Length: 83
Image 1 (cartoon, one colour):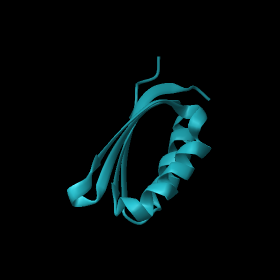
Image 2 (image 1 turned 135 degrees about the vertical axis):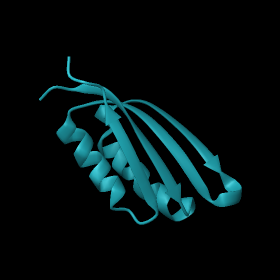
Image 3 (image 1 turned 120 degrees about the horizontal axis):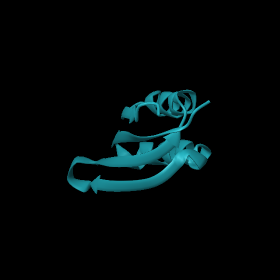
């Protein structure tokens, strides 16, 4: 499977409860992650995480699928076109 460069945006609501679950999944898929930036919004009890990934469509789907199943998490992603 061809790996391509891409991004994943994650919005985490109720971050005290949800963030540990998200971090466990990101650790599980850590070999796909080239970079990570996280911004907490303390007043609204949410966080935004942006990941730069190098992954195949199957790998990205496995990771985003697990993240999307967590209550209070919204996930959007994209990969570069095939070369």
